Image 1 (cartoon, one colour):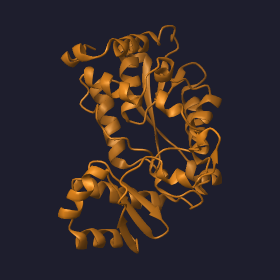
Image 2 (cartoon, helix red, strand yellow; image 1 turned 45 degrees about the horizontal axis):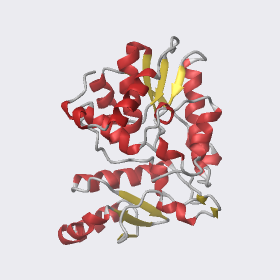
Image 3 (tube, rainbow, N blue to C red; image 1 turned 45 degrees about the vertical axis):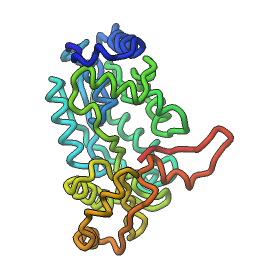
Image 4 (spheres, rainbow, N blue to C red; image 1 turned 135 degrees about the vertical axis):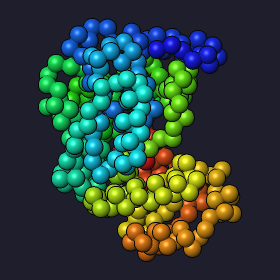
Length: 290
């Protein structure tokens, strides 16, 4: 994989990180499985794994109602673009009360289901890696704990690469999705303690897809009972308010079963629902971002 001409503008430290990431795979004779969501982080990991290992690197995506259908399609497209072998693994986290009841450690149950299924699928030989980056380590993250319990490694962390580095390197490599917005799983749209069902996940996913079709590139639909709250980046709020077809929007949300819909004037804040969690002396406790 050749660097894009933009690589000439990369800081030396980023180039060193890229070389470290390329060297991470030495000794992977049994192959590598990338837990692949289709986000920019796991896609960068997959790209370099394929570059270094060819068919020895395989991407596997966990598929459940918590993954929006259009994001699964993007993951498939990106894997094809990279020439990667891509498999899909149906997951059953909704059958686990530790997930469906939506406790604060919900992400632990989700990743336990995913990584347990991955290991059963591929056997004991291949190394399993994920797309966790350095910025993900700042707070309590039960999903990361579950991954570690299953022996999953994080190449981006090992190479000191943060989210900004992921985007810089992806752009330098010519990946057209380098600035793709973060899209946490749909379960992150529900306050902790509010039960999660497949129907509720699909409803939120349909409404976010509809809002994106109306020009909202980055959006969350927070579901609180039968009330929906739209979050978009703060800078986009004035234009949204000026141009939104309010009656059409309300009708669309009510057709999905919501009784009321509002716009969050604070804007989109990753992990906003985590504000309700207790705080410790080490800063905010976060069960996952959304």
